[in-house]
Structures are given as structure tokens and as C-alpha cells.
Length: 287
Image (cartoon, rainbow, N blue to C red; front, top):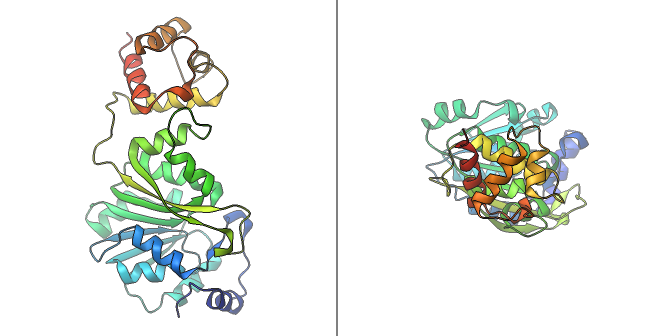
């Protein structure tokens, strides 16, 4: 039984007397066309090992199993495990893992299931934990081909904007440093049970083969980026000077900004990824 329609989803929920957990941000997709399009946009083939985060009752998992060589579905809610065991019983190429994705050793999983080759990640992410999951995947340098995820629409917009816009920030820069982001589907609230209060979007993050900028100290660059946006209304100089993460004097900070070719009144939100990389490299070479 395919789950991607309201009747079948409700039948499973009622049969198992499942209660939605607000703490897990659970919203199940009930639009077959959207489910099919997500899997299609993820570019899943019979060559692929797919990591699905938050399978719910297995709506998208069923389709992923039909398209992929193998699927690992990581679900944090223990009450969903018996449901998944039932809805996925006809598929022999899926492993259900009852765990918090932030605690899963994804590199080990990729090694065991895919000989260490890049994996594809597909997810309908709880909105409250979107950023930690995506950044965790990137920063751990797990071998990833692409991440195709359902997120809150404003978060998807934030990931792909450039300097000078109100949505531009640390998340935009981090995502664009590691990947090429593209919103592929906008999803209205009525496509879910229960209906969320906000619109959603599916964004595909295609991992860069090589990062678009050369940076000597990646961690320092992200410290600078965070400090620049923590106090958006302040100048870049003041933002860096006020940050406990930045261990340079006011004079060194001003000299670095000047070497970058920007004036003293510039704000962090005006800098491109290339400029943040250059500024980081300037700081790296301060003796």
C-alpha cells in the first residue's frame, strides 16, 4: 500500500493509534506528486545508497527503495519503528535505524554500505533542527553527493541568497561554501498532515567537487562569518572586535579590513563569500 495520499496515511495512523509529537516537528507528506518529484529531483538511481532522515511512516521511503540500490532510514521516534517495519516489509533493501541523526556516524555508514563513495541524502526535516543537521553533514566532511531536503520556505530562501539582502547570513555563506543550492519545489501547507503554519520548499544542495574559494583556515573563516552576523547592525569592525571567538586587536582588525579594500564602515552583510575567504586568509597571515 502506497502511503502518499491522505486516506492511506490516516489508515496507518489510526491503525497504530499514532500521536504526533510536537517535539519532533512531525508533519507527514500526503501529496503523491510532491513525493515523486522530491525523489526525481534527488536524482536517485539504482547505483545509489540513500540516507533518509526522518522517514515518518515511510511515505517517501517506499519510493526511495524502488529507485535506489539501498536505503538507510534514520528515525528518532521509537513509536514509528513498528509502523516502518510494517509499511516497508516488502522491501529488502532498507535498513531502519532508530537514532538521533546528529549521533549517527554517517561516515562509517557510508563506508559500510557504499564503500566510502559519496551518498545521497534525502529528508523531510523538522524545521527546528534544519540548520544543525545540514551543517553537521557538511562540516563532518562525510562523503556526500547531494542533499535534497524539505525545509521551511524562508530557510530555503536564506540558503540561496547573496550579499545585501535581508535573508543573507551565516547559513547562506556556509551552504554556498560547501554546495550549489537550488530550490526545486515550493510546497503549500495542505500537502501535510498535520498542516504546518508556514510554507515549505524542497532545496537541493549539490556538493561542490572543490570549494569555490581557497581558504587557509576554514574554522577561522566561519568564526569571522558568525561574528559578522551576530550583530547585524554593527559595522564589520565592531562585530569582529566584540566577538569572543576573534582573538585579534582592534588595530589588527581594522588593518585587515583595509587590506581587503573595504572602508571602516562596511557591514558583514555586504561581503561576498570570496571576500570572507580573503579576509580570513589575511588574518591567518598575521604574525
